Length: 109
Image (cartoon, rainbow, N blue to C red; front, side):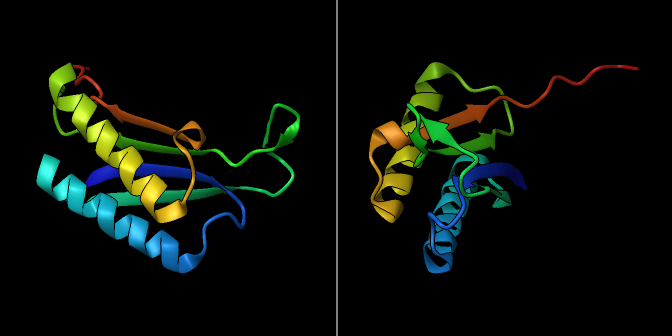
């Protein structure tokens, strides 16, 4: 499984849109990393998130890759994540923070 954290504002994304986002991001994850996404969907309670002294409409989407990615691999995947999010939510690119992290290094304890 590919860990995927989605941090959104409460009430911003209806359940049916959330399901569509999950399906699209999981398909991207399977294609790119060979595993479906495993979601942690978290909502910021209404009235708790602000941008420029106004209620926030921003979302964070963060995946963890199965291997370290080169910039040439990472950039198109980030573009696709943002495209999925904007298409499904009708938000602008300014409202999406996307990341694809390399896996944590293995330490020998």
